[in-house]
Length: 339
Length: 291
Image: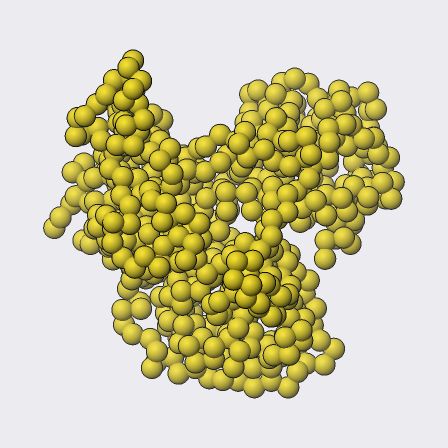
């Protein structure tokens, strides 16, 4: 009772990284609260994954296995979660901020009339005193997240309702397995007694892998390349950096005309206009045709080997040098600092 | 079989947080919220387009906007009219103030019960909070199935709706009976532009509050035409349990707000050494610009 439960997401017979990251974080929270850390695993043929959950510190795995649960469906999955939470009364439940977690968690929170905070970037335990009533709360979950388009950081609490629920994006928390797994146990959930035929009114007709359309406008961080990047191969470095930062790759007209990038990525007068939080201009000279489409970015970093390139005048930070050295260093530094 | 559908589009008026350019910064580097324009939440526009496409296919259908907010959010209803919607309701009441996603969902669900639609379509999330919670919570409050991350409503036939969903690594096509709550992803088609005739006809559509504000403003036409009146609903109109509205219906509380301070505008020149780059990256991470 009153433990922490992590919802375990699986994809293609494997546990999602975000779930293992949440278990790693859950260990720290459980130690502070002197409570247990447990996992909820729902699916078909997933019991072979249980030892990996022990390896990450779950001392009890609530296992709901049935052929009808092979793919995620809102209604049966939330029915199982709600049944379990009613019995176990967890104080904290964490979900990955994936398309599954962000579908399931709000449905569950609404049914429990309990609070939920989306896309937390940090989770801590702390106390709270209600300013008006003077009422004191011990050991609440501080759910810390950016809001307002990332322009503020808010700490959200859930003083009176349980469980306290939050979703966290993949890659935000660090993933670390234990050197020796915990000795865990399985609680087998009686799926048949919970699920009703009406839980299956939504049916999946088809699922397949399909590449997403390029959407640079919607991205809060853009790594853009110009003619100075030199080749299509060198553009791969920009993709590497963008992948690490969760950014999109943009390009100047000259880079698109040279065939380094697809036309959908073109930024500038003849492309799209963007105003991201961070714009990293690589090998872009800074002609008005390009800058007209990006000069309202909140922060601009320019990377160019030419110290006199006009783009440096526009930039908040300018780095003069070879992109083949600079970008790998940025990736290395990000990986060192972000966890 | 009924081929005409009553569709409610949930839309929110939001500050344009995407366009926090340098002119929206205060001197201390924090965002000047007052300088941000109030806009129709982008994914709610995608949702409106999906609703209008259903109406294109089944012309007897009715598309209604439902928005909750202060009196100025009536602009959302007018914008809906300009693009082809048939009407809308502004849900506004001081008792709704301070609502988190759960209390917001409760208010919206009570209004939806009163409208009694066949299909409810919303944007996946609003850009001021990015929570993506209101859609699923409205569905739960109405005991309806939900289809989130929708990219395309493929068909509505025999009381069932077929929808393509956009997930992290691919797409999924699902079929659900109606009524259903659908949330639409930004990868769905953009909304059609405003229609000039609709704009001329509905720019004078006003709520009663707006008409009263304008009464002593002699050069603005006063329209008492019933068809141009945007209804305003409060708690008294939608009923329900008062404790579940607004602040008292919100389990989450904001404990603390920190403003992100952006670097003042001055060009700093760095070398390509690892030390310089590492300093820059650490700064970007600690200011939450990245990561």
